[in-house]
Image (cartoon, rainbow, N blue to C red; front, side):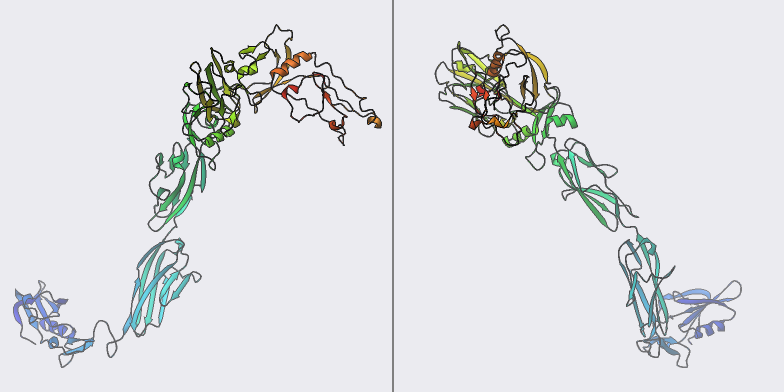
Length: 640
């Protein structure tokens, strides 16, 4: 024991304090404490002493020795200042006559200080995850001797053996659910003791879609699109929309406050794949929808389904698998307001034809704006009616009937009929109305311009046969002389659906010659209108319109001319009336039929024929083509 130092004390190394009655009691306590090297005595107001035990002395920490009146500092001789113990042990002063002893360090036990209770660490100590996953927790255990038992338990219950696996101290929970929330404890035991460590498991509900858009959506152009998408989980998910793999949406598409993708007016730029991606702190999910923007086939469909305002629109007559959509002008007031599709071209202006003498020498290709011929073909096929105005003004220039002019259809065919006429009659509109310029008293032309005189004349009208439209090319000639010239005008292509300019079936009075004071008087006809062919059919009744059965005797072969049916009265209308009518109209035919099991009425054998208006025996039958002037509304005779 070193001598005491009055009025001094050692600070910063006190590890234990106590009140005592006498100074010797403090010395005894220091001797009994394994780590006590010195002590301080401090008088208290109650007359007792405060004993402070220190694990160091002033020899090693002179800077910590402080002056204070009334205090006493005293130290033992420190036997542990030298390396007296092996590395696995530490030196303690006192307890023995040597003044020190060697004890196991760092909690080690055993004779050689190499053993001890288990030490462990659970990694990680907090796990956060979502439903449906598998979770593995590692319990790292060490000890000497090695722990003979490692157990996992749930703090508030027993582990489910069906969904848990323990192997080498690790715990795996399969297909985890929110019911697996809580603390899990790993316990290890060896002969020196037991240690435990825990992990907190937090399980959140899995991220899932509450509302998913359909995988495919087809929407009419100019209509609004509303694609809703929402997701839920215990964590607040965020919703993002992507377009064709990027987060940049096309112009006109936006996401509202409810995470719905909104397109106010769909167009072709909005077609593509949209992906709704939901993300929370642990996972992300996504779903995709392919948007097809379908354009209306015609302006009639625009009017019926979208809007009734005239303007420029995109249409797609043959759908997404056909030709591309193309722009047109929709006239919503023409043709009774059914919605007329109008396509312009580069040759609409009145254009002079001069200096081209040979037939068809003048050639003009027509180019339609923003549409190909195949696209316009699809338009005509999708429409009930199509028309294109065409006009030729001529001065001493021969025309169609003379073979100098024609127009070319979309399929490249030369067409020798003009606006207002048709393929069967040929010629021009005036030819149908018998109003063309007269050449001689007994013959009229089919077109005015074929008069070929020194007067300005005109042939014009609408081309209405859909399968020929649009006009692809114009060809003219006979304008090579100084006094020969012409002007052509070609209107826009116009198409519309049924309902515009509809003509009902009607009974009316007609005058085939166009002159009410002729000897051939006007008479009543029923006209049936055929929308598809755009032709009015004149129907005249007669007394033999009913089905007639002929079966006399088996001697019909020998007396094959014995049965005659003479129909001289056709509803009080003269044969002259019908001659005039058939001369004016397009070809007509009278339908004959026979329902014998074996067709014995063979015209080729001379057993049957019909008689024309001129009294000629005709040996061809219905369905065989002949010259159009042979068609009739007249007396007919069936013989057998």
